[in-house]
Amino acid sequence: MPIQEAPSRARSPRESSTAKLARFFPAASPVRIPILLTRVVDEGNAFTESTVIEFGTSREVLFVSNLPLEFADMLRVQNSDGTLDTEASVVALQYTGGRTAVAARFTHEVTNWIVKP
Image (cartoon, rainbow, N blue to C red; front, side):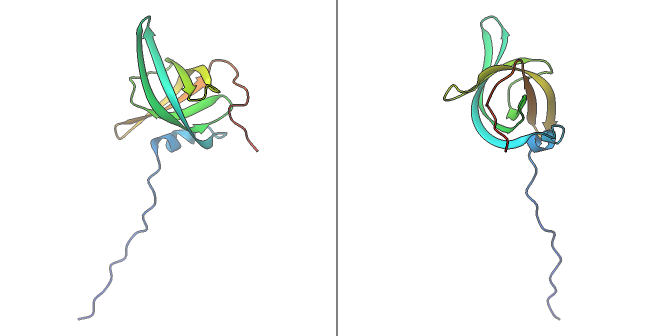
């Protein structure tokens, strides 16, 4: 009896939760910028984590977070060399498989943080 090969499906890389959220931000460009993210709950209480901005627009940043975030939470976004140190407000959250993709909009204009061709 001849051996028959079973058809196999091509495996596509799994789309990240941040990439799924980025679909709602057509101007978003893929980036990879490590940041320190801080959510201040009240005076003296802050939650901080290191994460990576995966997509950005001139007004928003998209990243994955393990912090307890909610819509309209205020965040401080800082990169290691200090060229990005600003506040942003959470405008979208997407929960996927235990991970939270977050979109946050800058509270004021941030010049030259992302350059588009």
